[in-house]
Image (cartoon, rainbow, N blue to C red; front, side):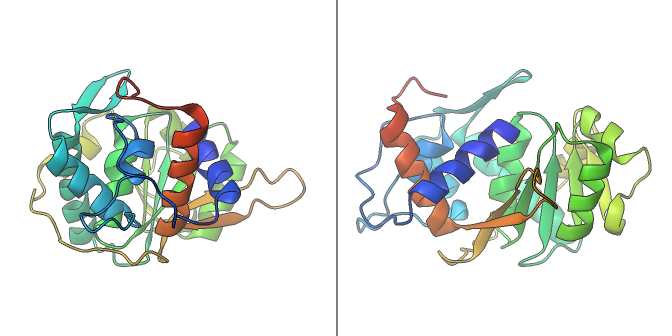
Length: 239
């Protein structure tokens, strides 16, 4: 998750406009390919919620994400993100609330990223190489409503049901997150964030002081993914 977040941050800084986004790419299996897609009227997709909806409609059976535990298609990722959105909403998470992630690379990162977008919540991705003290400081600053972790992330925040700042902690890979997600509705919320709404917050390394949150909007991410597509020449085999 830290590597994915770093690429997003770097590309967003180097690309400040999505106005010249090219036609939909052939990439199946990358957020980069999806974010570089266009609406039917030729305008770029500038929010994460529409990205997964439209890619799932266009290529439902194409491979979207692969991790050590398996792989999922765009249709499945869309369905799971609907369930994450429903679970978060039922848990009291509202528009502009933060949903934090502390984990290694996983399909869950994208389920949460897209799911949070479908209710207007903001995903905060933490570097899983941070110390427990650094994690605590960021959580205190970010004030997330919920923190989603893997087993290793759980060890950094303790075994209780809450973390710094009082947010609830839910673990995936143990069955806890999966049970909450799978019990939730698969119906899409239909919510579409504005292009300039904050979609993602990444924190700086803090090497020169306290780590600072960097807000990225849907417009920033669209430009970033276009830059990545052009820079590393993704194709239909990329995942």
